[in-house]
Picture 1 (tube, helix red, strand yellow):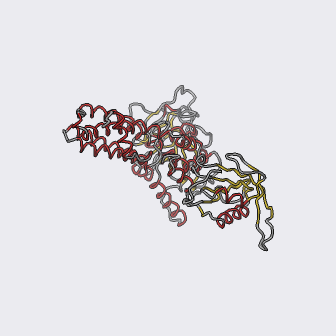
Picture 2 (spheres, rainbow, N blue to C red):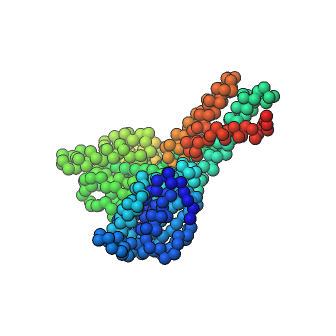
Picture 3 (tube, helix red, strand yellow):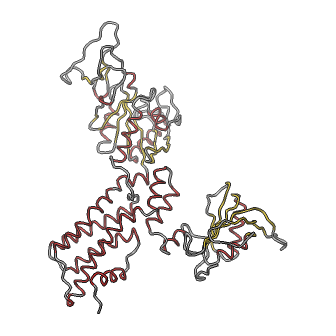
Length: 506
């Protein structure tokens, strides 16, 4: 059994979620991990690297008698450095009884281990060079994943996808730094000073991959964090019905009585892997009823806090003053309009293709009266528009309210719901697609942005004829920013690169 550095603490923790389950795991890492483990269980054969062994979990009686068996467990030993932490590591997988797991942990602590800090196993893996910072963060993201897309993204990052995108840029940057350092430090040894054009060319080659990486944050952020969509509108336009359609179950109460929804109703869904929290709100209107007024106040708060807004209008009714004010209030925000109840717009038997017609005086087309006994050819619609009567309003009938895209929908028939989902997804992502190694956290985004800013300063300094010593300051700032993603580049790395590239052997 390999020995480890005894100056390092041995840590222990329960690695499975709290509560009861089929299996629960107690994990130990450090120089005493193996010796403590063999005192917690009775093994039927000696520990072997990466081989699960059946063992008895023992309980020491209070009277000092012989330990008794209270459970069976599988014990797996990973010898340093071939373990997650690169230290000796033992995992004891017992039945998921909180009592048994707590017993194992308390006994491990009494035998010389200490309780692990949050994330300390992964922290040790990072400090030992087992993984870089982006991979360590991916462990947390994988555990926290709520959608399959989030899990895939975290797994990709844990596999080094982001590091692999950063590394070529970082390598080229280190080479440029080494080139300039060599020209400064070894000028007396006939090492040429790098021309301004060469410096500009090398920096220019670094910028596009970093710019593309920075742009990936547009989608990576929402894949990681998700968004909130507030569904708002006047009472009885079908907000709760649309909410249920999007959730695909009867989550919110729906009645024909206006003002049924008094408080916020929330539900989390996934649209193409994007976590989306839907918020169904109380209908916006003036009311003297105290409970409803409180609900409307919360609706306005939800509207203010939401990243996306879905305004629901009744396709059979014109806009009222509150809806005009609502449309004005969301200008400049990511917003969609759902023209609900569009299936109630009366069909005209002679209509071959549905069109939008305006009341007389609003446009060149005018309405025509229907024949006696026929259903009305046109019905008044929102914002003074008249919808040409048709069984349904297809995608060609999309209109806009003050620049806000609108879709005909029917929560009753399901018409337009798939298109609404697609439009919500497009609104959420801005049309950006997934790609390997996306930036998913603000820290990553700020680091890449800082690197780009430093490179831009280096370009200006180089074009202005500023000495290379000053240009190097900007290049080092860019390098340090990338180091915050992948791990620090030491001065030894740069010195080694200088001597290997320029064959200086004095």
